[in-house]
Image (cartoon, rainbow, N blue to C red; front, side):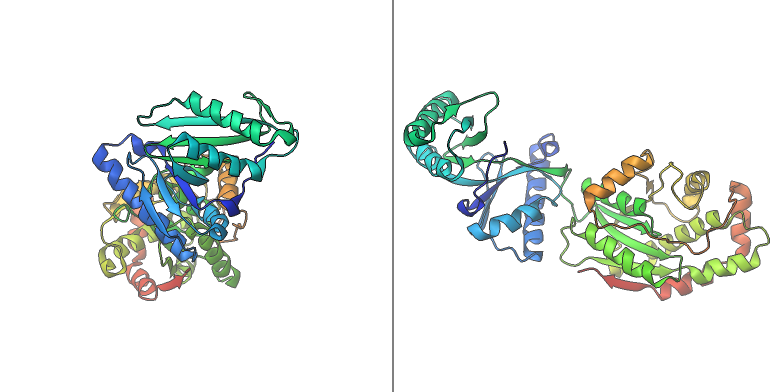
Length: 407
């Protein structure tokens, strides 16, 4: 049976950082913890959730945020979307004295224990104390039975109906009834780990950016428009809003580049249409290279890499072979590596991850051209692309780049 969590009773949330952080050197670990705290503060402020104070425990193992009782519930929903958190617990804090621990234990028991319940105390301890974890469990358990005789409570250590957790850490103790694990864990997003995220409207492009965020990267989305359908912009802006909720940015902006005019020219010029998908890919690579060279003032300086949502599961409008081989031509325009975090996922896995991010993400008919029978020959493609002389058209599109503020 699930514990009843008396949220209105708690006044702090104890945050357990991702285990990955503890694998780092002490210097890197402390830096990441400070970044994680900063990201949490930004996320709470953006959602207008006030807190009194925050602190690291003396051993730097836990992060504590103190709230008004009424704000705990909203804070929980926000913390679920912060990368770098493994789990967290709404809790009460008291001293490390057994007497005080038992007093708080009784208060929590009053909120969650019901007649006929079985219960267990889960105790863990860090630091030097004059008692053992077993001492706390025995005295706490006996105190509960003695104080709630009318409830006919029984101890069941293997399969209790209710659990109360006690964590003694240094000079303080924390009592809570629920361990809330986040879906993603990961690493805290760092401002210097910048990734450019091109998006043509595929959910796999968003997923690629999301997975890099999970690894601590700060993303800069570039939306390439390949359809005149007005719904495209509305739907993809909505999709990005769902993703932006996981970003610790005060302002989240996507930039839209319209490629329709360029692709229409290619369709009119080419007798054989078999290379349109591959040419479109090269247009996007050239556009990204220009953005990275000429848009320093827009926050694109010190970009480390580019992402791509290619996934070899035959779900994209362009053939997988074209998607995969055309990536190799990025070097013609840019020195930056292309990361493909979704490349090994089956379509079922992509759908599963998308659903976990948000059930409000929607598929979009993102390309009005939908060329058939697409092929790729690297050498022929390079020659053909050069002959099309698209550079001026690309510059024109980039000069008309639009900023879309998500929040």
